Image 1: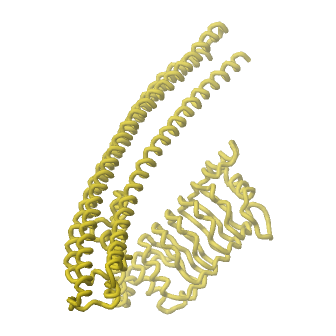
Image 2: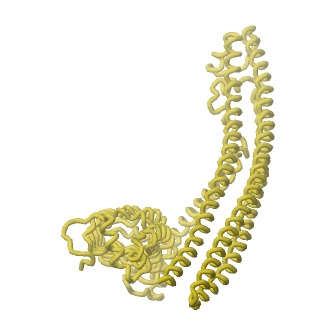
Length: 522
């Protein structure tokens, strides 16, 4: 069977093939009617049938962004590819091809029915993104390992499965294994599963199933913990204070500080470090908590702004609809009377009246749009001032808190230098009896060496503090600038779309009037 013409040579999925397929299937589809009347609009096509076309490679489907059903069975396709843009796809048939590996389906998150029947597939995998999968046909392939069944347990909506014709289907325990490990399955190999058989299967495999469920629950708990951790981190990043709710910044001061780590072995330094860390972390926590509060204020400001914008647009649109409805009521009555009028002067007078009404409507709609533009511009300007003030206050207070971190570092530096020089003097006088690691003693040869070591440690710490402050300030200012810029650009686009809508409607009404006038003149 070859619906679009016969071909024995491998075919390419080019525009010509796709246009032909849409046009030939069109009479039964709304998209096909549109294709015949106004030219093919691939983006509007909902169903596409390309079976028996000797297609070797899937390609050129990126324009079919609304596609829900795709039939590619009975071709010579070797790889699953080129489907990335078909995110609305619900039904996909790739049966009777030469596919060896399941791949290229990661973006098809709405897929419910997938057929890969009669291919060369040996392993069931790479389907993780298909969380809505209900029907899976994998019969007549080369699947031999029963562990592939366990992989399918993740698909909670899977109700229909076909695996007949695979090596695993020849196993004595084939059906019972599937019944036990896929308890929510309703149909296997085109037959409804008997509930009594399910109970027997579960009893037979109960120990293994219980152990598997335990492992799955542990894995699920870990996954949920990781998801919660990522979501929390994203929330903190949105507030620009990630990793400030603990000792992360303080620990980073010493992560690359070779000299500072050596000096921590000196007597009394561990107590100094502990006190320094405690005070430093308290400041970081203050920054963190303040950042969350400010983020909430920015969110409230942003939500309130968008609510005001949408409300203004809704009110303006409602006024426009009322003006159009009032115009159409009068306009259609006038047109009806024109058709019934036999006297030419009276017809001409009413046609002039219609033209004036159209002009008046255009002016009214454009006035409404100008009023909305002015209203939204004022709202945007107020929001811009408010959000800029919030960000400015946030930056100012964070910089003040970071300055406290630097003060703590300066104080610790002075204390460390004092202890280090005192230790040097005692070593030179032979009065230092405590053990020090050799790599630490190497620093205490003269005053310059120890001062340089303490200074190098201090410089690293200040640089880390400065970098974290600069990063925070740069990111929040960039966020604010990009947000305001986007809001202005969105309003420009909205205005252009609205003006285009008004002109399109008025042109339509004028053309209808002109056509009526020409008809009456004829």
